Length: 119
Length: 111
Image (cartoon, rainbow over all chains, first blue to last red; front, side):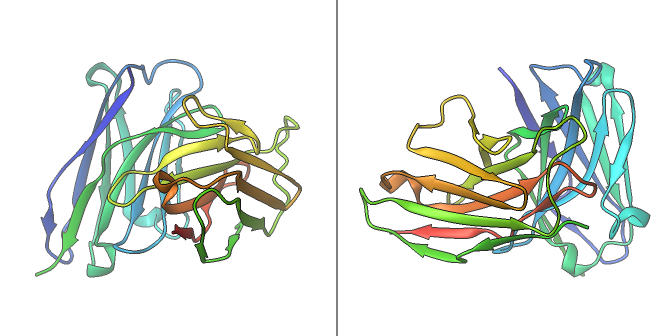
């Protein structure tokens, strides 16, 4: 059974750095073809892809947010961590992590975590 | 970047009747391996997205067969043959062929 779960702060202040952790089970991020990505959804709005990390440590980022994002993996802990710097109220959203297998993106999703950016 | 445009934005439906959602991309979605990486997701109220369809027309495990996907090139369609009450929610298309990955704006299906 594949599961993913996001964790991190629910409230951050403007200019702070957000750190989110995706802890997963039921698959290994050392298996060829597997990747884990982050997607966010502002309240009442559409999904937006943020970043992806592959089994071979290749990384991809949304160009519009690339300067603010870092994605890393800890294969031994079955975790993927996303950091986003210089948070702004417009970054208020539910942040999801999701698994992919080769180009078959996002077959399993976490429950999401709502992050509010406010002073 | 590839922009995914869905229509309609809102789709009032009648239980038991068919429904159809359109998704258009600004570039063709055939990958170098010859496959087309176009997915459809369902997001019920208060829930995480769930993938329904991958590679245009392949249903994920557990997805009812009343859902079907079709299309090619830049035009794609999700069809529900007979809408049920549990189908209420927002549907998103997503392309996985070109970087950056991109989602459509969503179509809200309501009874």
